[in-house]
Length: 57
Length: 105
Length: 106
Image 1 (cartoon, each protein chain N blue to C red):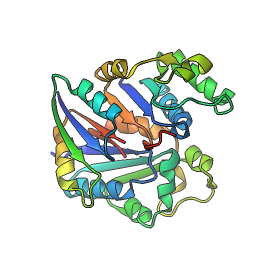
Image 2: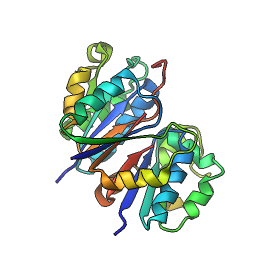
Image 3: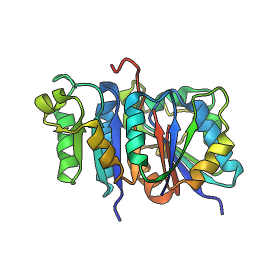
């Protein structure tokens, strides 16, 4: 299972812990939306490629 | 073959991401559905909202009950929407049932 | 097969409408769950309307959890720890961090 974690802001300690637990033993990738100019083209490719996407706060 | 993508908008802060992801997905030949709920309905007042609604292969709707609860008059239909797009949470269910990929923004 | 969907509510501001969103999926024959992550709802926040929504979610085999003890003691939410939540999320088809996470957790 491929997971994609998208971060809309700097992840809190709680979010980091949840990401660690849900990703254990699974393929994972991450994308940071909290930047000046996100590469949306790349993001869509990553979403296409993932089995599950979580868009964290 | 291009996939379809549904976007569930619950934050009042992410219009640039909604537009950015939608346009990038459309450029890849995707079909996009965007549903705005609760504080996300404030984004109907953004200048980009009518243009988002006007894009081909994009289905935009909002939760009418949320729109009312955050202080707007449901008779004041946001520019770009038609009355039937002032909808319910069933639109979110449609995204989860009928679209290949899913994002929360 | 019915999807399993978990809503995470970062603050009171987003919880009550988020619970309504969870109910909206429960009536679409999905398993809908919610969790209060950081804050405790005041008695005045949790109206009869909200209580009914929570009861309906439970009737449809969903649940509303809380990490803070206050919602468990005052409102009957089911206690969950962060670690237990993480394990439950592993079993979900859809995970929804709802609204905005505020740094002050208000």
